[in-house]
Every structure is written in structure tokens, then in C-alpha cells.
Image 1 (cartoon, one colour):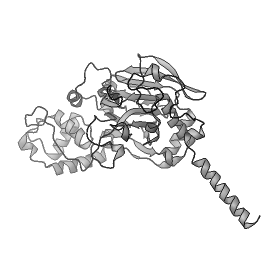
Image 2: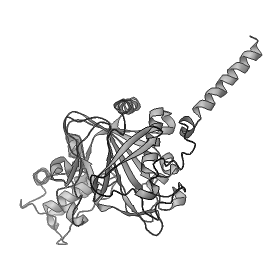
Image 3: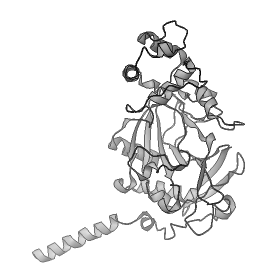
Image 4: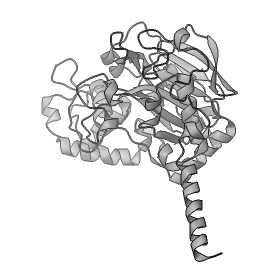
Length: 398
């Protein structure tokens, strides 16, 4: 073969490979109507106007739970169906058994291990965070409960009263030993001294943090993986959400919990405000804008590791009552939660962190009953995948 013909052959081969790898997932899976894919005809039946306008492909959808125990069969791809079961109404939570196969779950775990895991962190408890003591009753004294909330908010450390008293003893902080710090006692330890001590304490007792796990992020556009693509398509077709919400800001998190691993109760999104959404800016002055959460259990767990919703179905909601109580500390009080879901390999949980605004048909108020977290793993290992659907406050900035 002449050098010219060989060079031409190489060029054609490269272009063929480029064409194949640059195909979109809808081209690879034959989904010509990917944007408005609605094989189940459920847009009219299971979502309420004005949030759902058939055929537009650009509207937020909030599936109707109907009632606890209600189930429906949805087609996630031609010839592939899943059962969506309503397990709670306040907040609205669905479970989808066998959302991923055992092989797909194992594959995501391998991808995460190949990427490498790091210790999980939260937005609270950062070293440069400003300190403020919580004095709920305004008496200019800090009792044990107020100090407990201060430690949670400032240092992401969840303590019981005996542990706080141990800190007081080591710092020689509570002179009269009554468990209450008055103004004179507060002045004996500077904020910097407290911060230095607490950071050393946390390093020695990482299980006291709100989150005790390892994690990594997978980026579908980087991994170029068919199973990941099918996972994303499955979310789009089952939840009936616009394609841009699935394809943009589409990274997802894979988390590993060893024995003792847990995640104390938290919410996945923040109330609407003038702050920019964190997925649209690199600034730390931002708010989390996650319309919905899809969580998949990638393993069974021998004991423990339930997903807990501590205020589900409460008659009312008061954030101060919640913060000053014990229910957020799932590491210690998980089984006091109102609702717990047992991990099952391949099962997905889905819930909406926001309601839909009736006037705009777009993202509305936060659902305050979506506080949730992970109970401690007692025996075995727990792996999950988290996929959050990011939505900005205006449709133009999806």
C-alpha cells in the first residue's frame, strides 16, 4: 500500500472513531424523540397544571403520589419498565425497586474506586467560618443545649451533653461546674482557642462529624460510559423532566459508608433568595438549588444504613424546635425518626426538595419535611449514588 493510501486509510479510521465517540446518548440509543420522550402518556395524568404542559419538554414536573402504596409502571426505554411506588406523601417520596441491575451497581462502584475516594465533607464546619454562639432565650448565658447547637453549626460536630462537659473540663471553661457559661466564663476562652481545640478534637474523633463516609464525583461527559448514559436517560424518562435538567450540571456522587458511617439529617436544597445557585458560580456565597434528589442503593447492607426522614409526616414544622431537639443527630438518634427506608441493592429513592410555584410553573418553596440522612452502618458496607437535579430560580438559567 502506497504511503498516500495508508495515510488516507488512517485518516478515515480516525474520523470514524471520532464520529462514534461524539454521538449523543439519544443517537446511541435510538431515541430520536429524547427531549419529549413520554412513552407512558403520563404527563397529563400524573402532574398538575401549570407545571406540566405536554409536548413542551421545558416544564418542571412533579409526579402526583396519589396515596401511600400507589404504584405505576413506567417505561424508561423501549422494552424496559420500572415500577414507581409512593411510600410517603409528606414529604412526597417514591421508591423504584430494581432501578439498576446488580451488574450496573457493581459497575458504578468500580468506576468510583478507579476514580479514587476522599473523605466526605459538608458546607458547614469550614475552618474559615465565622463563629457565633447561639443564645436562643437571650439571657446572655449559654446552656448545654445552646452550646450543642453552636458546635453543630460552627464545627459540624454533633455532641451529647457529657461530651460538651468534657470539653469544658479540658478547657477549664465552666468555673462553677453548673453546665452554664455566663459572660465572665465565656471571656476566659477566646474564639481562636476554642476553634483550635475543637479542630484537634474532631481530628481525633471524626465519627462525631455530621458526615462520616468517603465519596467521589463521576462526570458523564468525561467517563463516556454506556451504563452511566443509560442511568441518566432512565432518570429523564421516569421523572419526565426536561432534557437540559438531566444533561447540564449532570455530575453525580458515589458514596461509601464503612461500619459506623452515617450522615446526620440535612436538606438537599436551600430556600429561594437573591444568591446565585452554587452550580452556576464558583463563589462560596451561593445557595444550593436542587429541585429533586435521586438516590440509588448500590449494595445491600447487612445491618443499619437506613435512610431516615426524621420529620416526615409531622403535624407542623418549626426549625428552632428541630435544631434544639435531638432528631438531627442520626448517628445517635436515628431510630427516633418518623420514617426509615432499608437499603436494597438497585433500589432508587426519589423525592422533591421544592414544590412548584403555581404562578410560574417553575421552582417554588422548599419542602421543609425533606430533612433526611443515613443511619449508622452496623454491619457490612453501604454504597449509594446521589444524582441531584439542579434548577436555577429562572428557567433561562437552567
